[in-house]
Length: 267
Image (cartoon, rainbow, N blue to C red):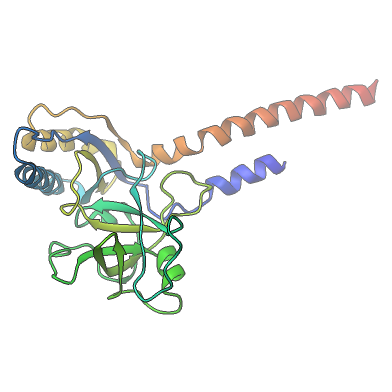
């Protein structure tokens, strides 16, 4: 009974985003390693932006965005240590760590992550001379700027300053029973990656537009192979598959034990 109750609570956990009606498309954009590094990164940024723009035009698509790895679809963000100016400096090696998530404009909207304060990652975010713009999650905001809005504040990664432009809700990205990490969403053109997860919000069943989305991507990237094209809801189901297996196993053995006990009492 306790096992069944725990599983019920696990499957009712709010992951922090709305998975219904979302198509997940995972692919790897070819990196032009024959070009100079600066030119290769510019080409990669341009390619990613054109893919998102073309997919957004597919009939039936409400919103589209891209990141390196969507929730439950990979390794998550790139975890790095950071410091907060004006706050006591931690001992070397004990700095807090933040998961950097490179995202395109519209990614949070497509995924259904609520914006708590400030503004979303926009087309001009990151161009300011005051530092790159980022949207941090609620847990990070409450931990390092308690009782006030962190919008307009900044944190440092090494010698680089990151300006906070907004606060988003917490997202469970690896496990349903985990506590969300400190997360900062940054414009993906500031740290473009070849791994690409497209999050496509649709008006109905996401698989109805799967073929059109594939075709749209291949208009920009002819012959592009796909790692996954499936509803994001199935990723949530997969995240609960191991607890589901053990719950069923315990229930089966529990029922067997109850049956044996009943037979013994009857005897």
